[in-house]
Amino acid sequence: MAAKENPRPGGRSARVQASVHQAVRELLADMDRVDVTIPLIAAKAGVTPSTIYRRWGDLQELLADVAVERLRPDMQPIDTGSGRSDLEAWAEQYAEEMSSGVGREIIRDVLAAQDNANAAKCCAFTREQVELLSDRALSRGESFPPVDSVMDQVVAPIIYRILFGDEPTAERVRGLVSGVMAKGAAVTPPPRASGRKSA
Amino acid sequence: MAAKENPRPGGRSARVQASVHQAVRELLADMDRVDVTIPLIAAKAGVTPSTIYRRWGDLQELLADVAVERLRPDMQPIDTGSGRSDLEAWAEQYAEEMSSGVGREIIRDVLAAQDNANAAKCCAFTREQVELLSDRALSRGESFPPVDSVMDQVVAPIIYRILFGDEPTAERVRGLVSGVMAKGAAVTPPPRASGRKSA
Image (tube, rainbow over all chains, first blue to last red; front, side, top):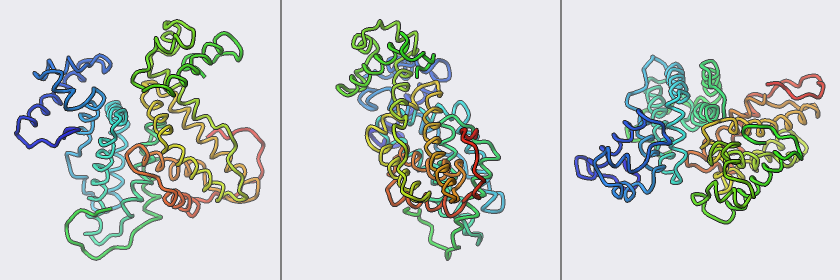
């Protein structure tokens, strides 16, 4: 998804985006980030630099756009049989991925862009995963804490620790999950229609 | 405090640092951040560009170093008479300052640097403030949640919301404080010697 347009799949605009994203990923794999420039990316992607400037504005926005795509979840959270252990497994994996070198670079790129549309998108991806866990638990007849509480009390402390120089250990992550499960367990609501929650 | 050395107050090194920091603050007040360069800063501070490169490495590190100094608390948290309302008042002010335009820029600058010593310092400033609140509450004979819980359940969600595109409203902040007070109130310990807690 580009910063400034939402290209029709398979259209010219979508092909340009795919090849520019691909070029950025390849360059980042090969060289130091500070050496990556828009002319280099353009040459590798087979487009003109002005195509990139027109579409993304600047390098920082382009890097944020590529980074957020790497955060798009590509799998369903593991089903371990109960809401609590689903959340534990998901949170441990999330903490591990986000505190890896690649994870930290992705967060940094997303946050460095002036436009914070990408940061909001990245938060939305995470929230969707938590909503999936919640839907699954509720459909099993279990109770589950409100999604907002999980964002505030599990996701936020993990990211805060990563950004401000601490390590969210597996033990600490389990402590966070156990805190939110103990406190804010929501009442099991009646089965509801599919449709995404608006909150 | 420079990124790479800890200058003796009043020494040449401290004077260089003070004048470079001052130059950065003045330039940022006058012009767009993307137009601020090391040669401009050097000219305004009356030092050579290589002095800046030698000491800070690059512009990003220098900006982070200046930004973190702006986060150094310059006052004691307000004493409102009880630990709960102290924490409420402090957290509301913290959320307000950090979500302002200037606050967001400071956080962004601190996080953009490769070296995360400044990010850790910024987290340490916040923790010191919470420790002060805790010490004050305990010395009044009140109970107070563990400092770690306040960091995880009040500070982290405020910063997460600011970074990822949501607004930590006053109401929401009070909700966070009320959650941490309800859950994890620590037992009042016996009066302890001064000295900063190591945690």
